[in-house]
Image 1 (tube, rainbow, N blue to C red):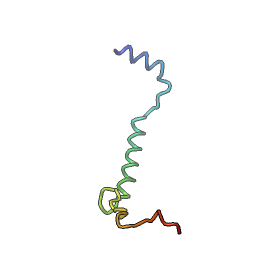
Image 2 (cartoon, one colour; image 1 turned 90 degrees about the vertical axis):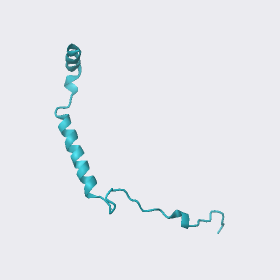
Image 3 (tube, rainbow, N blue to C red; image 1 turned 45 degrees about the vertical axis):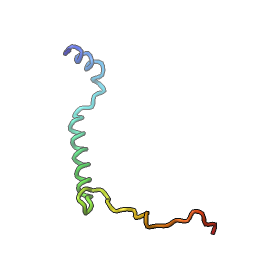
Image 4 (tube, one colour; image 1 turned 60 degrees about the horizontal axis):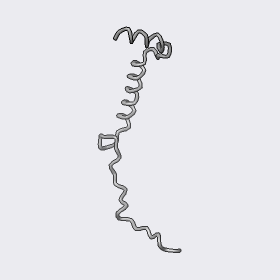
Length: 64
């Protein structure tokens, strides 16, 4: 099994991104910080206000 990995590394190793895990962790941390810094009053970051469309009346049939 190890020889298979060695062959793959020789074939596609030049396309590898060095320190990819570090870059992913930094991007995740930045995303987490921006997500938690813009949290709504509910604490979840999700807008829970209703659109209140059931109380609105729109007359599509009127011609004027």
